Length: 105
Image 1 (cartoon, helix red, strand yellow):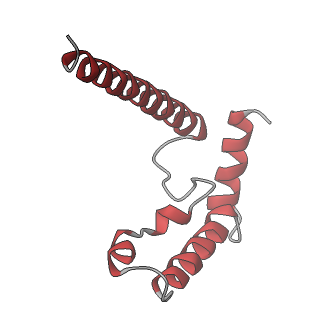
Image 2 (spheres, one colour; image 1 turned 30 degrees about the horizontal axis):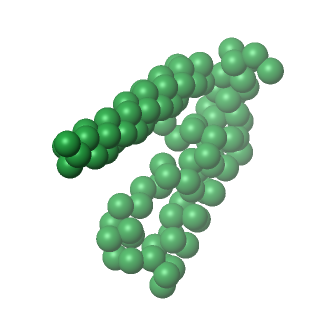
């Protein structure tokens, strides 16, 4: 399905139809959020860091960006994270190699 068609369907579901995807996602996210808060297995630190948006797996609770813009943002974040992880691995290998060379004559 094209992203623009999905955007139009999501607008219809979220703003025109009262039981749309936005309402369903709000219900799901809040149920998961409160279930997590009431869970005895989570630490108090983890409970403080929880947000309702953590449970928004369709990414519809933040209506400021379109679906295409959200996908582009996720792709850019993924590429940035991959680049930083590759460079950090390279630095670790370089530091290990330099450490071994310093101990030898």
